[in-house]
Image 1: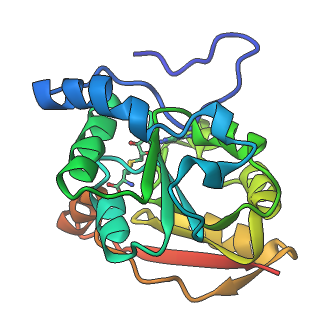
Image 2: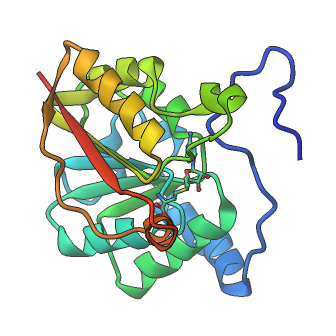
Image 3: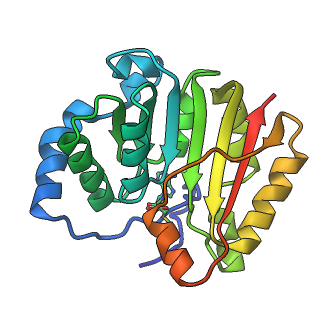
Length: 219
Ligand SMILES: C[S@@+](CC[C@H](N)C(=O)[O-])C[C@H]1O[C@@H](n2cnc3c(N)ncnc32)[C@H](O)[C@@H]1O
């Protein structure tokens, strides 16, 4: 696996891994994703992807979707769009959505940043990024998803008083994010909302990592 991007290609916050799909996940991707898909065509009017108009949360990098599923179950009065590029994770979430017959979740197996560029101004009430890849090595820091460019996109698509919530178990990344958040005049730092535990977070706790939740609100 090489991390070098082909010349002229944008630096991505992920590397596509070959993941093993279970039979059930494969079937879910083939049969259920088309109905639950949040597609490019939905970008001009994201609420049109749902049965009813409700406050909208967008999650970047939901992993296996466990915490997104829990939030969607707990908050039927909110709509959720989940982005994840890793196929088995998408399949896992789709199976959960089907099992609990949730109507308030849509899914995309794409780079969320591309979609943030296409969504209308002030269309989201919350954006959440739980345990983004920390990209430990200095030469890979440029791949960290929480950066100045992302905050520019977030400032445009969040509605006034909308919240960006980030959690990480990597202390140097937490400090970098906190500095970014405090320096940006378009937002104020607020208390992070409650959230369910994620799979990656459990791994961090096993390694005795400190978990940090950080949030900013659009002024
Ligand atoms: C470290 S994992 C954390 C997963 C999950 N949030 C958790 O806490 O268990 C980060 C995930 O973000 C996904 N990801 C990274 N950049 C992304 C992007 N631009 N769009 C969509 N997914 C992305 C990766 O594929 C990876 O699965």
